[in-house]
Image (cartoon, rainbow, N blue to C red):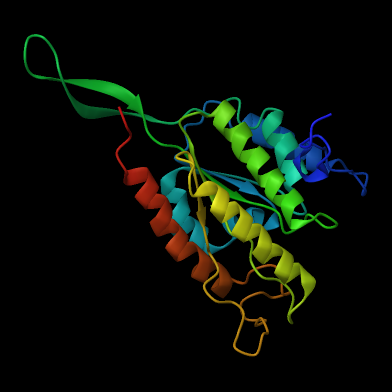
Length: 247
């Protein structure tokens, strides 16, 4: 058994249906169905911070025009997202094609227009719910997800969002999330198909606290908090989408 198999955060795992209503699997099946015959520019994947994003006006203002899909499920950890993406949520997604001048000369002279796929951006935000896992295990889970995306969507670019600080006051989970961010950022610095993006605008105040105005329960974002995160995120996504794809 490999080291990755021993890592619970990097082992595809169905979410335990503790409530008995089957909602998690129902959402997964809905995402699989929703992805059929769709050509999104951006796919958001992750936990409740992704799921709740589309309930705010900032989603309609910034991300709806980008033909986005939102595959967020509250409470998901890396192993749950890994299972979902390995079991159908990416199988029917194809990036848009557009007519692009490649300046490729043919034998007769002139240039030819060809159809080529646009870059699909997969925004990944998961890891803060990996309770009981070490930073190294969570990092391993995130890297496993990136590999699944690479295998299923080889032309996609995965944009991994940094885990936010959590809790009103300093606590071990803040330290854990910061260490995960450090590990992921270092690993992705050399990968052409993925990158790390820190979306924390400075939620921790000078006294070490997080404001209720930014995170209403000191974990989930308010409208103000989402605006602070999403405006620079939108700029970063546009930069990736607008970057010419390589021949």
